[in-house]
Length: 108
Image (cartoon, rainbow, N blue to C red; front, side, top):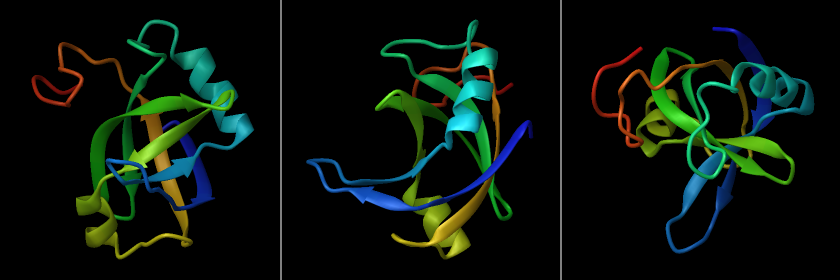
């Protein structure tokens, strides 16, 4: 993994509630440098992330000039993390390599 950081897990309580980690600014600079050839629709950046022993593919989304990392319920439950917890993440920008936006298809 190319980037490691810790951040507080927060919930967006919109029509489709989800949990997120805000990538720190120094991490955002790294993502911007790596994302030139991988970004797609709305500035989303495909990544491979790991919390504890759980690894998954997802996409960072732009927010307030930076990026946020969505954390799936399955990951939260497997790693026993919840809103307000400080979570350590390892992550790398990962070209989609033919994967669909939902993560299906060949992996990188």
